[in-house]
Length: 179
Image (cartoon, rainbow, N blue to C red; front, side, top):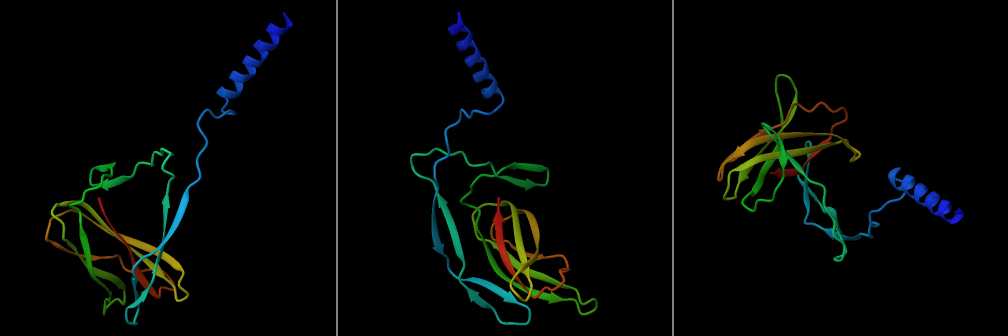
């Protein structure tokens, strides 16, 4: 009779621990390997200075081949909401140029540039992200501009909002995203 009570008590506490989340029934995460790759130089444009090249280091994370991982879904902003992102090899753009423009009347500064759709498909969404830095090289802010339904062979001239970051010294095009 006592053995039955002990077994029932162990089963009871086991169920309490599992239902409370104290015991994890999922397999443990496996270690991730990291590799370092140095990319081609990244152009950094300084206010009133010539273009300089600085090598950028990118960290690439790979998984062991025997571990199956489910990456988090990525969603792309559309005029009507968000939808899951999917890779399209026809989505190819080229940042042709960018520069700083100063309004002679107001003194406001904006970043102006051009992007060309060099792919074979109309791109649903393009976003250019610009990071702003102070004179010590610290990021002090960012801005982005976006375009919907960018046709093949077309050129888009983008313009940011006026730069309003105190201590702004130079900018860098951080990313051109297509989705």
